[in-house]
Amino acid sequence: NAGVTQTPKFQVLKTGQSMTLQCAQDMNHEYMSWYRQDPGMGLRLIHYSVGAGITDQGEVPNGYNVSRSTTEDFPLRLLSAAPSQTSVYFCASSYYPRSNYGYTFGSGTRLTVV
Amino acid sequence: EDKVVQSPLSLVVHEGDTVTLNCSYEVTNFRSLLWYKQEKKAPTFLFMLTSSGIEKKSGRLSSILDKKELFSILNITATQTGDSAIYLCAEETSGSRLTFGEGTQLTVNP
Image (cartoon, rainbow over all chains, first blue to last red; front, top):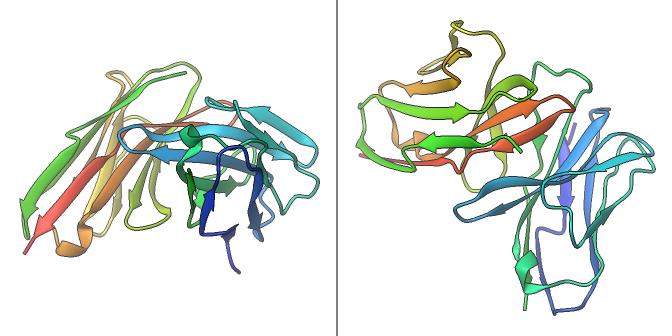
């Protein structure tokens, strides 16, 4: 049981490049989400999904796209990277609509945009 | 978006001390209040609180929620150097959305 797996762990991009951050979970969780963590700002919700084929925007969705074609995977796409997207990105999952066990987080992707 | 405020933002104590971390939140569509511990990598789940006045306890850590005054506290007794971490508080609202506070950076010195 691997939990929530994020790849890559580190990435450096040039401004304007695109990339996909991968997130996979093996706990059969319906709910998956992406957060970014910046110094002094806590974690902020980017996008989330309550099941395959269903996605919605969070607090800071601009510049990011998501899709959910399977229960296990929830990739986050940066179409044209900007320095403001330099951050640590976390994927989290849980049972839906209710979990008494909180949300399980992946180990994060540290992204630097130069 | 609801706002979650944690205090203090930073705390330095000696091993054996007891600490109290604070978290206040707003009430729109409240479902639960969660506490996480973050060391180098992923936040790890500590507690989920949904009912007011009921203490959750795990070893030296405990937490309680006050839904009338809209706050929660996390207590750590007999602190150890391994307790050094960022402690995050998050409000869960309907739709499974989490709003996090900035976190409290706890440093426990030997």
